[in-house]
Length: 164
Image 1 (cartoon, one colour):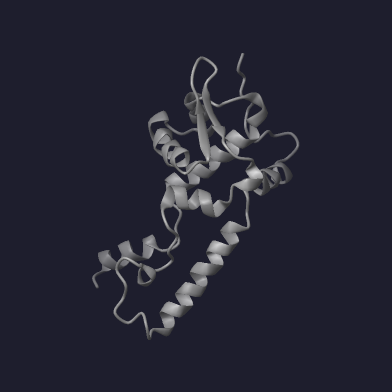
Image 2: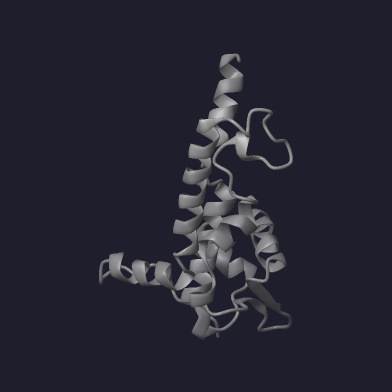
């Protein structure tokens, strides 16, 4: 394997993409402004410093996964379909990144010919399961709670929606 192939292979394992990070930030933002009403794409882009064009690519999979809904009209925008307590990090990551897989040897579509006898594969499966379990046990509500705890009292995490 040449250096470029190793570099490409190594960067794919257990790395959340920009889309995943921005998607999580966007969901936290929407959840924290839940009582204000639906958040427009422009509001979210401004508060999160994300381009509207890129944010659109983040929002669509979250809508398709049944996490976000859209309200049409003058007061329209995006809102959580379910309570933050019912939305897990695993669900968010899967919607934005696809099925979690820490190693290529766990790929069910292209199984490794040694998968039946490989001890390393069993270890990677344990790691994969541990990551999934951790993400399954962290909800959007927990992330909001952590934001509130970690923010200094003089700094707001997100500016208010400022809708009139």
